[in-house]
Image (cartoon, rainbow, N blue to C red):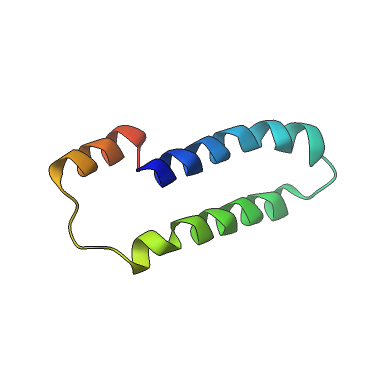
Length: 66
């Protein structure tokens, strides 16, 4: 769950970086890079899943909007 929180915070704080520092880049390239990084971050969850999550984990994921 800590990794999910970390990814959520990184995703949220990247908007300030995009607005201030990446103005010279094409928006499509920036969006593709963000989605690619997110895919790399969540790949271990897809590969190493231990089966169906328990009820508490599913509720936490739903509250985070996953």
